[in-house]
Image (cartoon, rainbow, N blue to C red):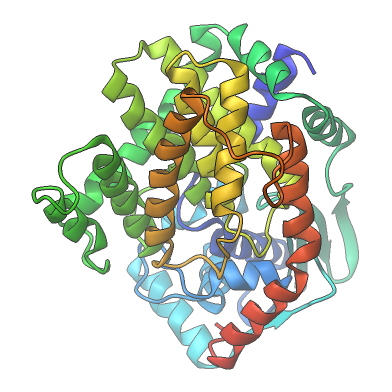
Amino acid sequence: MNKLDLLKLLHQEVVPALGCTEPVAVALAAASAKKIAGGIIKKINITINPGIYKNGMAVGIPGFERVGLKYAAALGALLSNPEEKLQLFNKITDEISKKAIELVENNFVSITIDSSKDVLYIQANVETNEASGKCIIKNSHDNIVLTERNGVLLSEQKELSIMKNNLYEELSNLKIIEIVDLIENCTNDELLFLYDGVVMNTVLSDFGLSGNNKNGLGIAHRLEELTKSNVLGDTLLSRIMVKIASATESRMSGCPYSAMSSAGSGNHGLTTIIPVVEFSEYIKAEKIKLLKALALAHTLNVYIKQFSGKLSATCGCGVAAATSASSAMVYLMNGSVEQIGKAIINMIANLTGMICDGGKIGCTLKLATASNAAVMSAYLAYSDIVIPESNGICASTPEETIKNLGKVSKLGMKTTDKVILDIMLEKNLLT
């Protein structure tokens, strides 16, 4: 992998998303199928893998008063704007909201979980008075791999293009030192686009703390109050926790602002950006240093997800995004590559057991906890304190430790993922 490949990867993986990416992806598939079919909607059938259901069941939809994948599918079909990709919810109107509720309440929308699909998978079939449309999204939230009209194939592509597959394969074969070297050779102009994420995710955080988030639980506000006492105090740790909590709580409760995502997840984007920006301000780092730190965080996030999986039973924000943010903090302190690796090992030793039980407002606590751990691990690593390879799944190198994390996430936690899904389904909330 060369520098241009790395930049191409960053442009692919760091993109805006309005709302949680799982409901958005379901809406995108439905929007594409409906646009193909035309006419008036008679039936919407959505088939998804368990991970999509888990992450979309209880999360807010921007500009809409209800939650759930049935509503996301209805909104997408009514919007019929697949060209907007992960930003398609920005066209929701009161009239569309009303029609979406009617479609769901009158049982025109169904959701089916296909447990045989262990990768990101969404199939939307929309039947109208004119035709039937079909769209399949696979592996990535906006990666449409097949479209049909009345059973006639319109477009088909491989799950990921050969070029994209090669990029991810090349990335997963790199060592941490090689990733750092590539980023060190990037210029300010080449990385300046990453600052859009700083602005975008800061707006989310500010929205929550301004008191405009009427659908939140009040987590960020209470944490902010505690910073004025000796419970939390006004420290770097507490400020990071408050800001990440505010952004997450706003996003998960359906606030009308986009997040800059990372590796296909808006919450990953919040976790890779907000703590790193706050840390950068604390140590007064130059802008180019911040941009390179963000590039490192995003790249390592994608790198770790190659091993841990796109959707798994482990919390990606904890084991991937926060781990990447911790590494970026060490980088901001001018730590060595070895110390960056130590931060990775410390984080994986600490947070690997954090489960993913779906996208929801409760993620606010997980992201606050993971961001707190990121600072702790970074400072310990910078002092050359690292959990030894004799401990649990840790190894002598960060690369091997990440591979061990992957074994736990993909192999070891398959039963855990099923049990989590069963618990969620017992709530009878297949929405």
